[in-house]
Amino acid sequence: MVTKVTITDVARRAGVSRQTVSNVLNSPELVREETRDRVREAIEALGYRASQAARQMRTGRSRLIATRIEPDRDGINGSVLDRFLHGLTASAARAGYRILLYAAGDERAEIDTFDELVGSHEPDAFVLTSTYHGDGRPAWLRERRLPFVTFGRPWGNAGNAGNAGNAGNAGNAGNAGNAGNAGNAGNGDAASRGTTTADPGHPWVDVDGAAGTAAATRHLLDAGHRRIGFLGWPRGSGVGDDRRSGWARTLAAAGIDPDGLDQATDDGVSDGEKAARELLRAERPITALVCASDSLALGALHAVRSLTASGQLTASGRLTAEGRLTVAGRAGDEEGLPVSVIGFDDTPVAKAVGLSSVGQPLAEAAAGCVGLLTRLFDPPSPGDPGTSATSVISPASHAPEAGTHLLLQPSLVLRQSS
Image 1: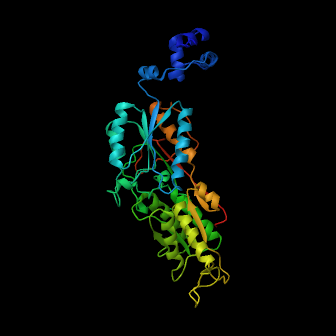
Image 2 (image 1 turned 180 degrees about the vertical axis):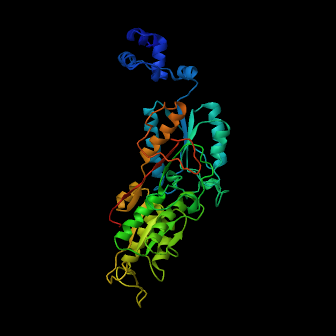
Image 3 (image 1 turned 45 degrees about the horizontal axis):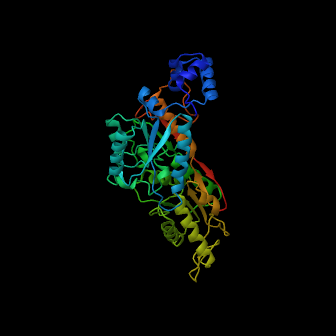
């Protein structure tokens, strides 16, 4: 029969008190380093495993962080949240926490789930994804003094505030809240882009979506394109409006009027194909496309390839007398350019089909969420360098507590499509 190792056995082997062992397990900062090392060596040698139930009774903390599983809408962009959850689980484990997953179809169902989880599992905190205009979840948690962080910044009540159930980002759940600071793209502040930050007081981690589409647009401009289109989602999506702004402002900075060069549609491959065909068949067709998601970009690629295969799309000139669509890309260049396509999210599908795309640092975002939560539980002492090497953004117009917001920069991954 295997004898269970107790905290008393660990204390005896390490030559310390039971309280010191408890402190090493629950509040290691209270114990000198040499003593911590000795206790940890004893724990490893004896194979001691702390009782989670007993630890929760002593500390009042469950070491659980709750977050929602997003539905897989098209098999493409769902992978974004999957990668974020993987990173969140790994980061939480390193910090001594476990992830508690739940499902909810809309805001009301999610808030009801909050209430149920607090009563049954007592999670220490929540990580919210897919922030949107009029998001009521942060207020509910804050009113009950429940710790939380959002992957996505607050969007306020502009536009379709009542459209809470749609998560404001056309199903692109992993990209929640990419309002971005757009400093790299010359995109100004959030309010000037038609978005608001009405509730900046809670911790959030975000990816600068406007900077991502700006980088994609600059790449296409550098390649000689001037008729650069944008496929996005209907206005009122915080994430979608922000990504559009990076494209529009970069074109404007280059002296190009973006009016008439974009299409808004639902976030699906077939939707992207239909919208791309509209832009390709315009009187002055586009020569390149920046897309708000890889789903839309994949649809655009289908449109380009099918038109090319049928002989309707070539890479020199304009619409021919036979109705054949041809594209000229560079001003003053008779040969023109082929149609280039760049997506957003750098999903595995993008890699498989050779689609250029804007990648998000999802593992870093997940680590940032966990880091901000642990700072809430155990505030850093003066002079603490912080929890992440990424930039800490605290908008001066609202002056929230320093160190509660993380703004991360995306990266442009170039492949055959551009």
